Amino acid sequence: MSEAWTRRQWLGLSGSALLAGLLPGTAAASGAAARPANDTAGNGAGATDAQALYRRALVLDANTLASIGRLAGDGDSADRIRQLRDSGVTALKTTLGDADGDFEAAVKDIAAAQALVETYPQHFLKVLQHGDLQRARREGRIALIFSFESAAMLEDKPERIDLFRQLGVRVMQLSYNRASPFGTGCLDGDAGAVTALGREAIARMNRLGVALDLSHANAQTTRDGIALSQRPPVFTHAGCSAVFAHPRNKLDRDMRALADKGGVMGIYMLPFLTEDSRQPQLADYLRHMRHALDVCGEDHVGIGTDSMFFPVTEQDIREMDTLMQQRRHDGVGAPGENRTPYLPDVNSVRKLERVADGLLRYGYSARVTEKVLGLNFDRVFGEIWAA
Image (cartoon, rainbow, N blue to C red):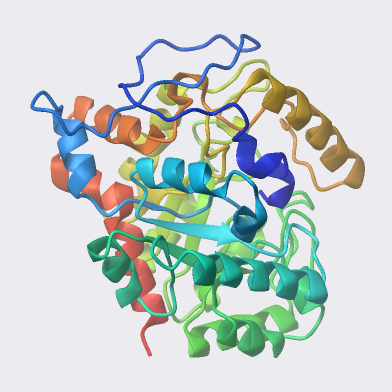
């Protein structure tokens, strides 16, 4: 998605209180009041296996908290940073430049994210090389991966990839939901392919060590991108078409091709996990996750939530309805954007701990669970960003 999902006071933080107690397993009904769940960091003697695993894991969310620099100028920065740290997430990819931001907008967003890092160096580390992911974890900071979901800021100039890489952007896409000079987005049908400029862009990304993200690409551009890339490509945030058919969900054959190339697919928590008559729940999310593990294998699946990071309130839902209407009006909204992007039964900053618990309950080993939580994306980014 994009900044448009997160405009309301930085992902629905209003009314969020300090979290302390384990999220209960009961699911909120679609349309019912959104209630922030209580969390625990699992520090007591009775901590579950999932809590203990989560404490020691590298937890990397490959798509969340767009335009994160806005946090620095917010009056509630201290409280929000505390909640972010309480989440247990040790690294995250933040989208900069919005879904259609031009060159100037992208530079401003990058500058704001850089200002956040410089204002709070004790909390954040900007990722410039692979080692920064583990360094941030060792130092008790959160690693921030700068990224683009749109190619609008590039216009028709692949050489700008070099410039933005120098500014710290380490993950880029060829298009958002609609076609760009480089490739075709998922809402423009399945036939449009990677263009000549797109081929040049991929070659530049490979040479510079910028990750090629095909999350929003249509089927043909996805297929082309995987075939053309000399380094492993990624789907940082997507779902599985075989579980629920949707333009933003990926076909099994493309998921296998991604894995064969060494890439990683992050499963998102967007409404596109299910039909649009109901709100997805954790069980739906795990259905996509388990299918991806079956198709791609345990070394090629991760997490890219692309959902509301902080507990969602009724006011957040009302304001998100307005934003989704605007996205549909602007032609960038996907089918099924009629629900707030969150899972009601894990309405918590520690939602990824609940994912870990779910995987363990399904019989996946601790090692596989740690791979999904972050080690797989850690591995693939190391391969992509290597000189």
